[in-house]
Length: 620
Figure 1 (tube, rainbow, N blue to C red):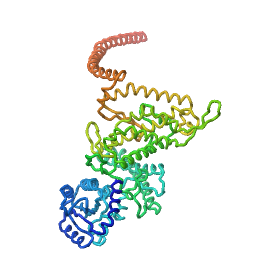
Figure 2 (cartoon, rainbow, N blue to C red; figure 1 turned 30 degrees about the vertical axis):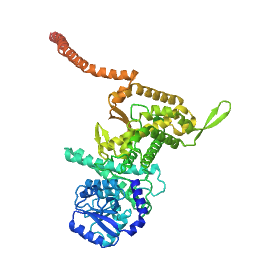
Figure 3 (cartoon, helix red, strand yellow; figure 1 turned 90 degrees about the vertical axis):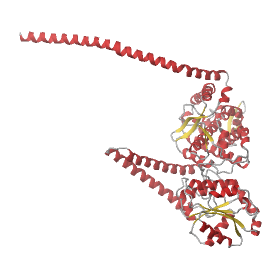
Figure 4 (tube, one colour; figure 1 turned 90 degrees about the horizontal axis):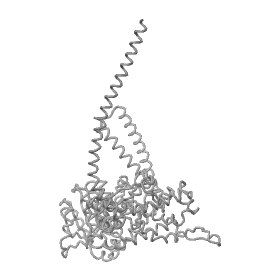
């Protein structure tokens, strides 16, 4: 949305003198005809304001805008649209209307009036980019007109009391006031908010369990104790966050300039660039970037919330990042995320078309890898190496690592799946295909799919950063001390790890990739609370299947042959197995049982005869 805000600001600045000469053009959209007539009369009494159009309800606005404008009404010439959302019960419809208006008419300022105050709805309206909000009857006419005029000039006119009230409902952490927010400070805040969410979910599960399941007295007492502990922790964390937000040092400034967005410093009250996607998102048919809310911060926040958790490798395959210290691994993921955000912003501002993304895919991944490598190791980091007969020689580490670009691209970067689809989803709000079904932007299915694709991209690029290091300076002492985990510092352990990676890539190329192609799926590595895990997502790969040759082609034939032969063989062996079981249990087993019974009877009769003979002998 930053481009929309910039466009509106430039447009307002260029036409400032013209605005002074002609009145501001307003449009009213209110379901109450009496209130609309009174507001129109108050506005037309002011010389520099002119009401040029009216609508009976907010939904009629798009219909009027879509009609051919006449000489007295042009949507592009409107300075402010005043909308009343009191009579529309569907909050998603209100948000969608404002979102579509902002997408189609970036220079049009919106001012929302409402007789009711819904915090969730107001939060969404703010994040969509609505310039102003005011409850009906809360201010006098003169103040309301001043708010209209300020909003028509592109200023955000929101009451501070409503900002403070709604800020407590946000799941975004309270921003720190230092000029530079460190990654670990942000992670600590996100971790606390994530903990509160987990506590709330656990409390809901305990409450549902008590209501829906018949518990014993002991189980109910245990659940009550857990609830008291969780509620105590929830209260303590909430009080700590409120103390931070209420402190003078943490108070946001009264007026701030709109900074360039950064996922490392998100505050919904200081920037209007964070967007909450609606259930339905309109996709632009032209080649320009779709003027829709940016969902990239949503994905960034989702991944940031998982970074404080375990980053251990829970997949069955070795990864290059496994050799790093836990802190270095986390730092590398943050660097890749930051660089990916920069790539998305550059694409957005360069106005690329959807058809150009596929051609730029290799270049984008290459730039992402190069920038991440330089940031992680340090662009001018030097290592001492012993030269033949010349003592030690200082070499620039990053320049040597970047010489393996061809190997990295062939083994890792070219293998990252669905990169173009992810960028189209972020830049053009194109729907994502989930299980062969298109899911609109903002839907739960599309959000989870985009998060999985972004997670896999971050992990893959991180592996690409470490691979040249293992090829060039695997056993260098400075490298081992600075980057490696203490369990992998001996030369033997390092060589064993490198051999495991080599075998992994060989097996993946010859067997796993053909199997995934034949099964129409991609394997993705995603972040989870337990660590890095591997999942499979559906994707059509028929074209790749037709190009397989050699061993990779015979692997698919073997899989097909197994699928054809396995069912009848399984049926045959099941039948034979049941027959063997019947013979062993019913025939042989019963025969052995009869033999055993006869033996026991014979032994029992013998012992009885001996006992009787001994008794009779004693009597004599």
